[in-house]
Length: 286
Image (tube, rainbow, N blue to C red; front, side):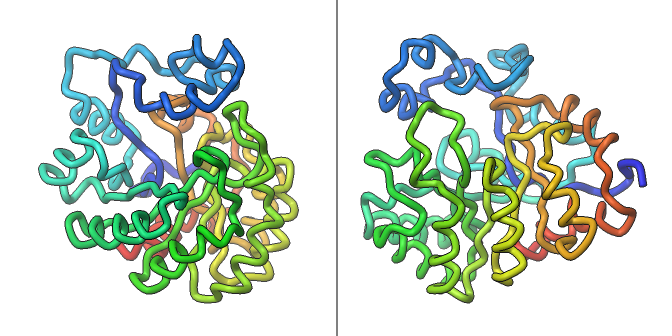
């Protein structure tokens, strides 16, 4: 079935355009190559046509994102509740945005307290983590992550974790997909959603999703043109409930490019509603 444009979409990775790229300084400070320092967006080498025309637009960044959401029938967007723009968006548009926070488990108890406070203050719907981007790096199955996973289980929050080769020029070992296996064994009640592709171990990710009920996959940072074939095949067979749509606006991809490319994704009829909306609603408890 072609991409159905009448399904209200839940977008599990979206943000707001800003002229200031200082939020990526943690990446620039940890990499060693000069090209990363020169890029506005540190993984710009991976993306064509990063939508920079929206950065520094005269319009309010929240209005810009809402306008793009309305263009492409995105009903709800999951955003960071940590910066001022995100906090304003959550206050002004609680029907359109839900909050999330990121953690660096090098500060073990600080991360646990941060999750508790964000749940209380903003009713966050998820936690996020970037193992290769922690400083120093923290592997997915490192003991430092275990109190974070435990708190997510306690508060009934999913955790979205980058897995696979990272885009920034960091070592990839902390995000090897095989590390997820031990985590799911130790936290059977954890809802763990991978981010950023799991490549080149996407087939291993499929095997692990078959094995562990709480393990899911989101399509963040990938134009639909490049969704791994293993993931499309899995969604069309036994994995319709496990694959969750996520974009990458405005960081690396425009919504126009994502939704244009989406028309050529070969999902079966019954997969589209789950992929675009139902799976996220269930995982995020909307």
